[in-house]
Length: 152
View 1 (cartoon, rainbow, N blue to C red):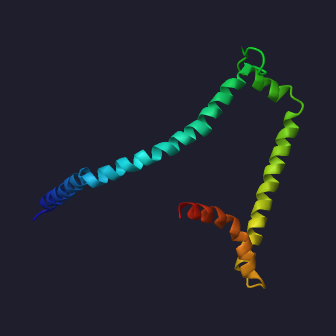
View 2 (tube, rainbow, N blue to C red; view 1 turned 180 degrees about the horizontal axis):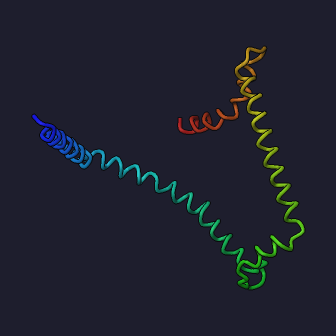
View 3 (cartoon, rainbow, N blue to C red; view 1 turned 90 degrees about the vertical axis):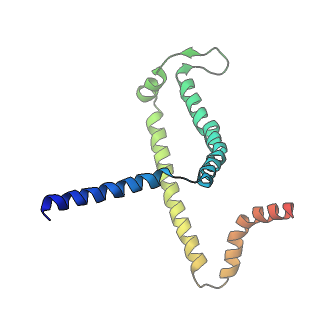
């Protein structure tokens, strides 16, 4: 056997394996198809909720920001003049951005520190650890207990 014939044999084997893979990929059982359909149907309410609670109001607020409108008079289209005025003429814009960034920074730092302290207290061997765990987890358990009792 020479190198050319070995190469041809190898290519035929590759083609056979690829055709088997293609055949396996295209075959799905009816159960898998119905399960996939059910999953998509179950996701529809979640997507509708996200759309109606988040996306549509955001788009509406952006569209409203392109108008000069105080809620009582008729809206007048001004385009991006509102944004130009905020970024150039508004004296409170820079201080508002600074205050927002400071608040976000301190909120994140305090949340991380608080969470770390709670995690250390819940896992350390201190006196009254079970009482502390109970007090901490009761607010998470009460709604579930209420639902359970309601359906009992």
